[in-house]
Amino acid sequence: MIDGAPDDADLAAEDGAARWRRAAHFFDAWRDGDSRAMDDLVRLMTPVLWQVVRAYGLERTLAEDVVQTTWLRLVRAQSTISDPRAVSAWLTTTARREAWKVGKAHGRVDTAEADDLDALLPEQRSAEEHAAMHDERRRLWAAVGELNERCRRLLRVIAFEDRPDYAAIAADLSMPVGSIGPTRQRCLVKLRALLDTPRTEAGS
Image 1 (cartoon, rainbow, N blue to C red):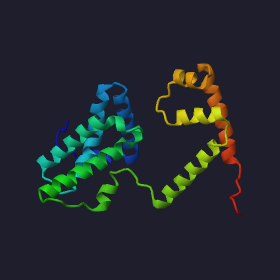
Image 2 (tube, rainbow, N blue to C red):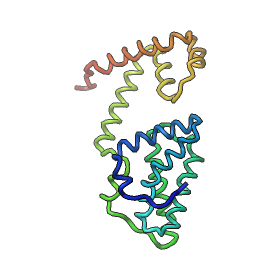
Image 3 (tube, one colour):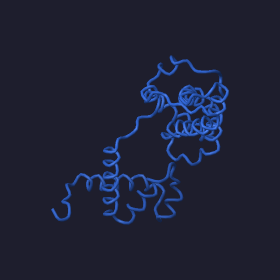
């Protein structure tokens, strides 16, 4: 899978955000049955993984083994990655952990300057952003709880399914398949109205 060490210019040719989007696209296409998409994903992300691994002071052969192991683990664990947009973070995290383990075993644990890797890795959210996201999710599901039962069930099923089976949903909810789309839209309109309505906190 690995065809030599990457040139730093290869990484500079494409900004991080665009690379992560392409990685998600290739990963999704591969899981949909396009075997060539995995080759595209390997070509895209191996230079990044190489830089991550070499940051731990590993010699070339050990670094190649770690990158190879990272790709093999992706193949085995691909079903556990529910959101294709997470594949870049999954790969870099796996490569970091494996490189640290191998480096420690060979007495070669080293660290790169943080700034050298920050440009290659997905942007991490701050504690404030995580708190804001948690609050948004809390408000979202509180609003969903105020919808009627059909809307609640429909939105929950669709929210947690990557590719909802409309026929199965229709059977579960005793709805015609053709009505799921319009019903979903009406439920989303109601949900948006609830989220847009100013709420008074208890005790205020």
